[in-house]
Image (cartoon, rainbow, N blue to C red; front, top):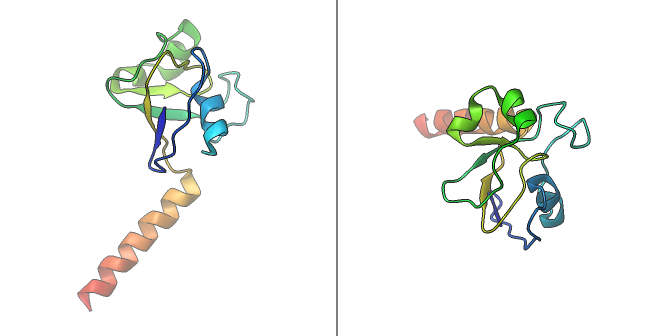
Length: 110
């Protein structure tokens, strides 16, 4: 299993959740509910071809259609084979990254 953008990989047993696999790989995925599908914070993007168990009813209801674009809840998604997962930056890091990109663009103009 491989996580992006970090590039970290980890081998896990079939049935391991993406959240647990991420923890084993040293990849941080934010969560408040302890993996009970209550907080909706642990969303990840699954790359095509990833081998995962089918989405369950609870996760499908929580995602309300986002699953059709590859979004899954890492606490509910279980691995069955090779998988590639995009972990979004947490909101603070994303804001900092956007600000740094803007600053770089402004610096290049001068």
